[in-house]
Image 1 (cartoon, rainbow, N blue to C red):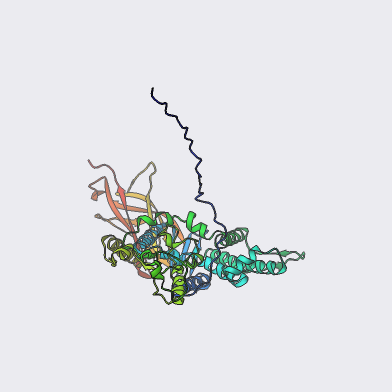
Image 2 (image 1 turned 120 degrees about the vertical axis):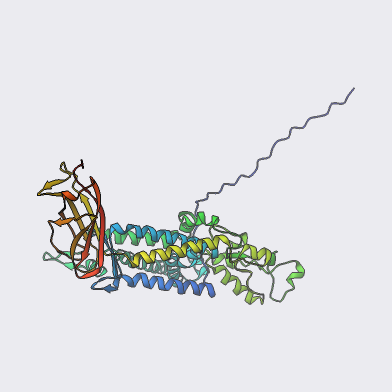
Length: 480
C-alpha cells in the first residue's frame, strides 16, 4: 500500500508595491552655498546677460530705442535696421541657426546652456542669492522652516519675498520695455493726481497687464518651480539624450575611483579597508539645483552646472585627496581614458552651422530696405487698345522700410518698347507704404505674343543702392 503524500498549500505572501509619481514634487530644495571655478563661471556668464537685458531698452539710436518690437506698427527695430513682417524669413532662419547651435554645443559639452546661460537658471540663481541673503545657508533655512512663526521668521520670509517681487517687477517691466518705449512705460506707473483729487496712472491697461503677467511668471518660475521647470516643462531635457554620445563632455562621477563609499578621517588608510575616495558626505547632492545625486550616473535632469564638481573638489582638498572625483569628462574617457573631439556628427553640425550663419549674415548685409508688390488688373478688360498702343493697368505698392525718407521713381524693362504712365516721383517717409495705379503701354505693331514678361523697377533718386523690382505679365490681344 503506497503511502499518501500530504499536500501543502502554498500561499503567495503579499509583496510591497511602490508607486512613483514622475511629476510629484519632492518638496523644497535647500541648496548649499559653494564656491569654486564653475560657480564663478556661472556668475560671470550670467551677469553680462542680466546687465544686457536691463540696459538694452534704454539704449537709443537715432532718437529711438535700439531694440523695439513695435507690434501695432508692425515694425521691429534692431540697432540700425528696421524689419517688417515680410522679413519673417529672417526670424525663421535665426531660429533654425539657434537650434543647430544648440545641437552643436550639446554634442560637444552637453547641457552647458542649461547650466550657465539659460534665463531660467540665471534668474533662479538671483532668487537663490536673495534666499541665502535673507534666510542664511542651507542648514539655517532648514532650521528656520522647522521653527514656529515668530517675528524673526516673518521678517526673514517677508524680506525674501519682497526681494523676489522686486526682481520680478523689474524683470516684467524691462521685458515689456522691448515692446513699448521703456521711458513712457515707467512714467505710466508714476502716480498722478487729477483735478478731482483721485490718484491716476497714465499706463495703458495692456502694458500694465503684461508687466504684471511677466512679473508673476518670473516670481513663480524662479521662486517656486525652479527645478520642476527643468525636469518636466523644458523640452530640452527630453530630447537631449539623442544628441549625447560616448564622447560628449558632461558631469560624471568616477565610480571606479570613488567606490565603495564610506566615512573616514583624514589620514586614514581607507584603501586597506576597501573604500574609495568618496566619503559619502552628500555635498554633491546638497549643492545641486535640481536635487539629483550625480553618483547614480548620468541623468536627464542634470543641467551640467558643475556645482557638484566645486563641492566635491572642496571636500577632496580638505581630505588631501586628488581633485576630480566628479568632473567634466566623457563616458569614453572614463572607460578608455580618451575623448575623441573630432567625430562625424560634431563635424556635420558645426559645418552646417557655419554655412547657415554665413548665409544669414550675407542676406542681412545685402537686404534692401525697400519692397515692391505689383498686381495686374484682373478686371473684365485685361488690356486696352488706344491710339495704336496696347495698355495694361497695374496696382503698385511701395514699402519704404528704411529709417529715413526717400524719393522713389519707377521704370519698366522688357523686350519691347514699353512706356509707363500715370505716376510721378513720390517721397515716402520712413516706414510709409504707398499704393497707386500705373499704366504700361507698348505699340500694338510690336506685339508678337499674347503674353510676355515685364520687369517693374523702383529706385531711390537720392540713393542709387536702394532698389527693388518685380516681374509681372503683360497681356495683349491674340495674334492672327
